[in-house]
Figure 1 (cartoon, rainbow, N blue to C red):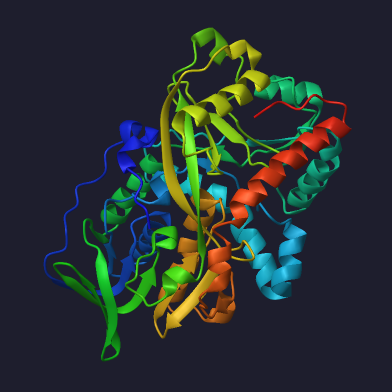
Figure 2 (cartoon, helix red, strand yellow; figure 1 turned 60 degrees about the vertical axis):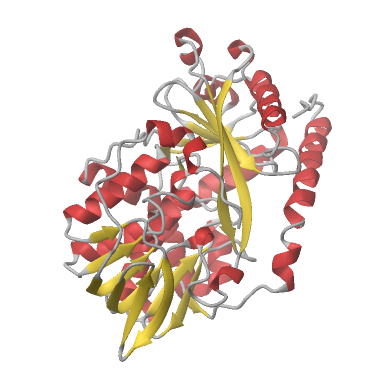
Amino acid sequence: MKSYPFEQSLWAHTAAPAPDTAPLEEEKHADVVVIGGGYTGLSTALRLAQRKVKVVVLEAEQTGYGGSGRNAGHCSPTFIFYTPNQIVELLGPDFGPRMVQLQSDAANLVFGLIKQYDIDCEAAQNGVIYAAHTPSKLAACEALCNQYAKLGKQCVILDRDRTNALTGSDKYHGAWFHPEGGHLNPLGYARGLARAVIEEGGQIYTSSPVTTVHPEGARWRAVTTRGSVLADKVVIGTNAYTGDFWPRLNETFYRLVAFNVASSPLGENVRRTVLPQNNNVQDTRKDTHYYKIDKDGRIVTGTVVNWRRGIDQQYSFEKFGRRFSYLFPQIGELQWQYMWHGYLAMMPRKLPSLYELAPGVITAIGYSGRGVPTATAMGTVLADFASGAAPKELALPLSTAKPLNGRRLLSLFVPSVAGLLHRWEDRRSMRQADLDPPKF
């Protein structure tokens, strides 16, 4: 697995400092050992510590080093690949509604924790705009809006004028608005969760990669390079950054490389016209497009690496420059300051999987681009399991971890082909609407 420099990200330069931690250099005893210091592991540990469960977190690098500290910082309480109704059809009448509730309430969970523990992470729960890039996408926007409204969410349809006013762009044809969405500094959020775990009595050890996990009597021992933890239960929260400490676990999903870029701060006059109410945006293109503004007025955006895009920095900057010149001609020529990479863990059906790997050992993997809210919410599920909840009471059914084998190799090529196809479909949809498709 290629290592991308953590220090290249915008967040490494702007996030609030991490709490003081140190490597594990002794034997510890705990009720639960959590492997991974990202959103999944830290959310699990926090929920357990709140319940006065003795919990130890082991992180190979620093808290938030993986996808938790590298994403764009969007917090959208929706599904990317499914509607709520489809989730119920897929998971059935028991688990389906629970998963829908878990995801649809996830943003409130995130911003509730930020408020409860006073986490310094640029938190802005100002709502997310799902914008239609062609008139034909408005029907799908309305259908999604209605489904989330039926869940009790105050979602509304935005006409073209209102969409243009909120985004600052006249290229959209309407949108739907979810008021519970928002955005944040993702590394600052991860570090804040770590601080909260420590405040609640949990222990965190960084620079402590786990090399093996093995049974010892009725308990489990997680061994690091310089110490170990003996615990009743093990929660693995390493997601896309899973190593080989548990046999073949890292073969049960496939990785996509995502990248993000950040511009130099916009001028004050221009800043007033681009996302003036500090919302974040995701549009209806198949070629994923999302963006927001950080605390210093930078545009932050990104997508999945596809051929040269995301590999060649200058080429990538030019592509995004064209995209934002098209959307916001008032900006002029953007200057880009940062570009960084991280991994996404994807499952074949593009939903998280909950695996009981052995009696007392559990993991959740595969958030498919909804890491901030979904990983935080899945931490509560893992904590419930570690606290003794019966499998039938969880939000997701327990599955058997199965390596993808040939499908995993195929997944290395599918995203590149799919990316080209998605851009072609986006251009075609615009031509069908008598719109001139931009070249980005």
